Structures are given as C-alpha cells and as structure tokens.
Image (cartoon, rainbow, N blue to C red):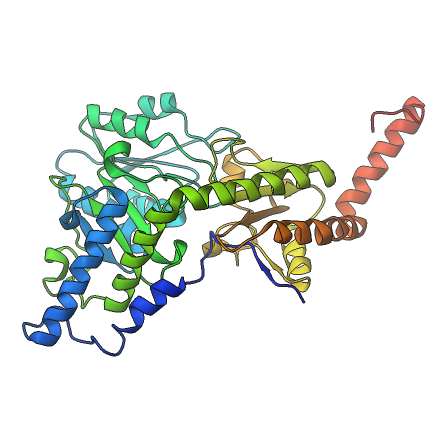
Length: 407
C-alpha cells in the first residue's frame, strides 16, 4: 500500500543530518555541560554552538535564547515570566481566540490569579483585527500574545504591525512561531517581538526540545522551575544535550533551505487546493486564501464527520488530521474554526493537510484519486446529506422548478 504523510504540522521526521549530529552526543560526548572537567567542557561548547545556530536562524543574539522542552513550555515561560514580574505595573493580558491551548490555557489560568484577560475575536479567515487590538489595550496591559501563524488553518497574522503597536505603548509582545519557523521568514527584529517560541519537532528536529527567545532588556522572570543555575538562571535542570544539538542543526538547515522549500511547498499546496475545490463539491477552504503558510491546506467538508474521513484515508495509506494534534482526541470541533464563525456541524467535517519537504506531486495525485470516492461513500451514508437532499427535492417539487434548476 502506498503511504503518504500529510500531517507535518503535528510533527516532522528527523532529518538524517540532524540525527547524525545528535548521535555523537548520546554516546561519544556524554558529559554534563555544567561539569568543569574535559568531558563537560566538550559538551558545553557544543550546546553554545547550538545556541548560536538557533539565534542566527531567527536574527537574535545567542544570549537571548533559552532552551526548553518544547513549544508548550516556551509559551508558558513567556507568559508567566512577563506576568509575574510586571504585575506591579499592570494585570491585563491580551491574546486571541485562535491561539494554541498552550497560550489560551495559560492566560486563562492567570485569569484565576487576579489577572484580567482579553481574548480577541477573529474574522472568517482567522485573522485578528488591528483595530480590535488597539481598542483592547488599556493602561494596565502588560503583555500581548498572538501566534505568528495558525497550526489549524495556516493563516499568517500581521505580527509586525501588532508588535509595533505594543512597542508604542510599552507593552511586551510574545508570538508563538512554532508553525511559521522554517516555512516563512522569522526574524525577531523585523517582527519587532520581545519573546518568541520555537519547537524542534516541527522543523525536522527531535521531539522534547524547543527554545524561547527573550529580547535583551525584557523585564521577564521565570518561576516555573526551581533548581540549579542552568540557562543563566532562566531554566533549572540538566540540559537535554542531544535534543539541543538536534534543534540547533535543524534551525541551521531550516534557515539555509527556507526559500527553496517554501517554493516547493507552495506549489504543492496550490495544486492541492485547486484540485480539491474543483473536483469535490460542497467543500470550504478554511483560513486566509493568500496570507497562509506555504505548506498548509485545510478544508471543511459538508455532511461528513472529519474523523470518518481520516479513518478512511488512513485505510488507503494517507495520514492527515482534523486540527491540532494536542486536541485530536476531543469530540468537540476545533475552537479555531468555531471562533472563525464556522457552524458547529460544518466544523466537525474539517481536515488539515500539511505538506512536508519529501511530499511530491504524485502524493497529491494519489490523494485526489482516493478522496472523491471516500467523500461520495461517506455522504451516501450520512443522514445529514440525506436530509439536505430531501429538503432540496421538496423545495424543487413545491416550486415546480424544471431540470435547469441551479442545483
């Protein structure tokens, strides 16, 4: 059976170059980087070289990069670190309704600790309005956290304009760049952000490692972990050396190959979107039509549940998802789609196709070979489709419309 992987927003395979680099630090160079002896010094040097690679990839200084266990921890560190040290200045935090739960659940938790939280609405494309953001800012606002690009619908937010607005008011700005890193340019100075989140396993690096960029001079303090003096007192705990080495290499390769891979992915994405919209009826593209990630295509199929489609696709060897991997076990439709105004029943019929560097046009062709029959079969079984057909037929009979009906 042909196997096609279309779920790169959930995770990516580790690039061979990354795995090769990591292997040495699992066996040959095993020292603790905080040790003063030869074995420790070897590893410390490699960790700092990896820090430079991450910094170079996002246009930062090495000392502004803190290694973490991944995107969720980085988001938590960013938000808690700003909130707790700046609460004497204000207690208001702004985010959006389409954030990853690592951000949404963190600000909601702070809302139970005396902070005021504003969750901004989005338009039908999942885009935050600059006017809404400006109107939400108060003299108590200390932090704005808006993701760079959506993991679920691929929409790219106008982070540069948002961050400039925050900077004018003396407000710290954090962006989760987990999905945008390696797909579109991510430069902290061009974006103007104070804090930025990166994750290894979204850019062909290992799982369980990430980074948080903290701009020099940012009033921030992390209090999640108490322990040793690692990461310049910013994150206690022995460093995940193989993971850090892998993250550094993955960032280096992502920056080097960005332009070529983005062009390759955008070509595949556009082919996929066009063929789905042309060949399968009753489908809606979700997310912004142009301001979207080059590898991202997401759809809502009327009269079908997304889970049924995903299981049918898997039986044919195609792996995709219905949204964030962190919420794939939930029976509720995506909070992102609902925030975009998509009806509850339609949101249940969502699937997300996220392409990767190894995907080909033949993969798209195979998807278009198996998908129309899957949709047709599931709709034939769907009571929703049958109800709609009955309603249309009754309407046509009642008004005595001829066979030229627009239907």
